Length: 264
Image (tube, rainbow, N blue to C red; front, side, top):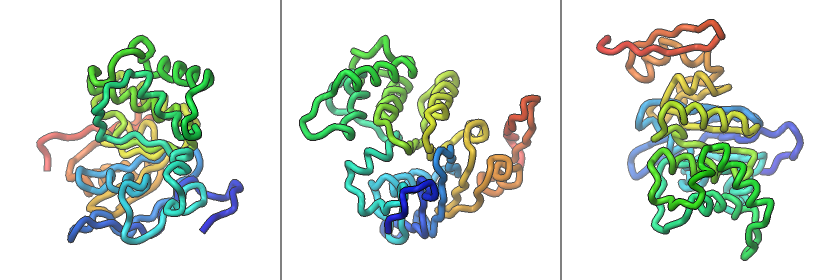
């Protein structure tokens, strides 16, 4: 099914998606409707199916049931190249067996925009340099990727996703390995990209700060969804995570979540 390419199509639509591995059902009847330029958070405890859901979206896994539409087109009908021109991904599992420089890894994000055997041009190099500067890596552009810390590697990979220049960006735990300074800088960069963002987020305070809409996963099902203030309640947090929390709003109107240790 292909929808009209006007303003009416959603950036991403998931209809009745289910996925299981062997006899274990990991996702069940997932329904999602994500608008253009929304910053959507997917939250839930470990094992709830967040990463599996994202892998179904970017076609590493194939659902047993359901359909996924990207910009109005069924993902199954898209070539990998076409998908890569519309969807960029930052995943958790990142292993490199070849010794590329920081700049070379980031430049790989331009490959989806190139014809076979076409080399990068001055515009590609300018964009890569701009993004490296934004993520604070310009000074180590010639350093080997394999020698970097986990946090530095994460920033290189988000830079690669940025230079891919797609309207939709998928992030699986984007602040993984980052200290608080770079967590906030990275999320600020992501939110400033003027793209649709779909992010699996572990930190509920980060989700409250940056997301415009949130889906809650538990045991492979969406148990709640809505605006952050509708979803991030003391009752929902306890029901989903089994943890007591207190919420307060500061003088700027920002909601904060304080977890209570040692209480049942």
